[in-house]
Length: 279
Image (cartoon, rainbow, N blue to C red; front, side, top):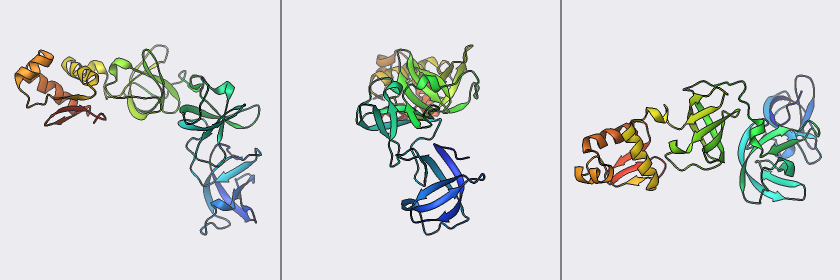
């Protein structure tokens, strides 16, 4: 069977005036329109295509790369709105529809939102939803503490940032453990810091939890964050200047920033130290 909203490996069966017809192992066919054909394509070849629904809700194949596939999340831009909902740019000719019932807040043209792509069982149409939480699954976890994971930030809260973990689970990065600019829509790598009894995932952006960072290093990170990612105190600064800022010795300060440097959190320069990603 054809997998709508996903990549399919199909065989070129025949050539017509409107394009090539491709088939799966069960003989179900789909059209690959002329605009996607190349001189290298021959009857009998097996090719990888993305299958979705055209404006008349008929399956159609494309060699273009969509920005999102079925049952996954992505950060997309709204191209248009109508009385029925919003239409997002997902990299294909036909825009992706988000009904009003699937919008967590009214979408606006030119704005970007994290959405989930699914196949609606009632209409058999591909739709997007900005109501992210209902598509995340934490009952059956596929990760363990310490695992490196891929993250997509989808919501800022009083506690911190809610994230999609590995396109499947929900995780939380606590605000007091974020030492860089972080925005909704950011894709980044993180680590499973802790799995709570109810299977909630605490996520850290550094390998090892924030509690494992030496306390003085945490102090330096907090000050760096408050001062827009730069401190004009390097390992060659005077002991007096360092003590005036942190009430610690130069030796302790050098050890603290050395630890941060090894963890890839800061860059040490002649004029001071910078948070990675801030300069």
